[in-house]
Amino acid sequence: WLTYFLVALVLEDVVGLQHDKSFPSRASQWLDKCPQARHFNFWGELGPTIAELATLPEVYSRRGTSPLATVDGTPTPFDPSDLCIFSAYQGLHAALKPLTYPNKQSYAQRHGYRVFSEVDVHVHPPDGRLHFAKMAGVLALFEEQKCQWVFWSDADAFFHNTEVPLHHYIQAAPSAELILSHDEKPQPCWVADDPRLRNRINADLTFLRINTGHWFAKNTAFVQQFLARTLELTPPKRKHFAYWHDQGAFAEAIVEGGVSLLKQQKIRFYDLDAFNTHVFADTPAAAHDLIWHRPGACRASAAQCQATMQPLLDASARYQASMRDEL
Image (cartoon, rainbow, N blue to C red; front, side):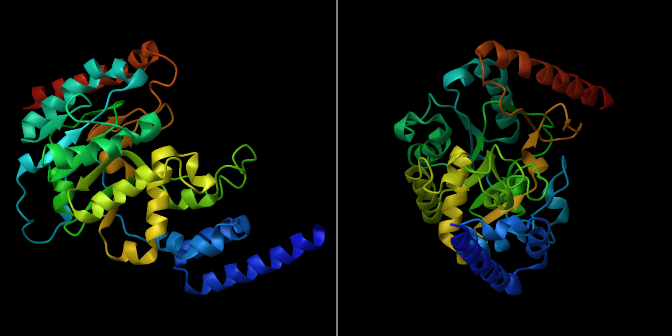
């Protein structure tokens, strides 16, 4: 057993060094901080795609302001009615509908978007897995409501700074057909150093850092095929992706497409705080964030949903009142 382990270790080091020669600097720096990653079984297969993802520039990272501030020239015109906002309130999250859905309806009306919930479309996630209702619903909206773009918004989130229009994020990334946000930035090698997670997640998701709490999807053949593939990945085949449910399915579908898919720039990333700010005690929201999102607000009970979300909604209402007073 020891001989086998040592031989495997040497072979993995060789593979890792070969990848290092072509890795962009950010990926190489991360490997220096997390040498264990060389010995994960995914590295030889996924290394180039991970490196490509690691160095993809974010479209715009400043929070609470329109990304069009950095766009040269006149952006392509956008018809707001082409954009549909979609949320699904199922399971325990049904308790959140009277709290956050009116907010989304108000925001949509202000900017000329359409808005839909799970009662408006045929949502049939595979095997009843609610994490995958978002992809099934987006595909249904493409067909049933002829939405040209869909913005998915988690049930435990709401629009806070309602001044910033969603379609500016589309205009700032004109080549994009699927617009995602990164997840929180973890410390290097956080998975490898955590024995509780080591056997079920590997460091590739640390690098992909995909968060599907909020995302944009364009009604194109590419996106339809991509989302259909995520629904087939229930759960994802690679066990280190499976723990992350729909986020893992997105990660695996991207990995299947490989470097060539990423270089087409049909998939673009924004920083988490651009339109998906996570609000926890240790990561407080900023006054001008577009969206406040409290993941896990409904993990225990309907009462927990309300107890968790109501203070955030109250704080946001105070902010909106102060903004009106300044006018």
